[in-house]
Length: 98
Image 1 (tube, one colour):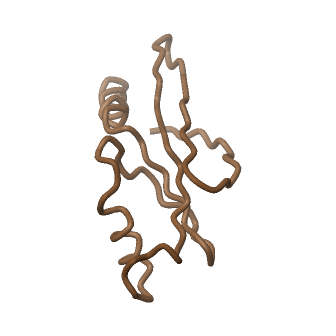
Image 2: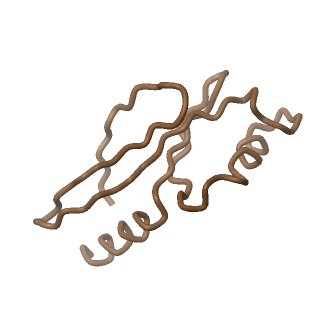
């Protein structure tokens, strides 16, 4: 699948992003959410940041699925989610385009 990079300013909290694209005349809407997860919010004492991310994502909204984990900083890690229904839509488009 091809990718388009869109810079998103790093702001605290959730950033809901709606993208509307037209590919070969077919219009599609995709919904993403970028959220900053702060290491200090990790509820389990660990030095393993993977365990921390796993714990922070365990109770996340089930309408959204993990899409991309960005480059972590010393304070936070940016994580991108996509609506579950949109991920299924992307997979269908990929199969149809093949």
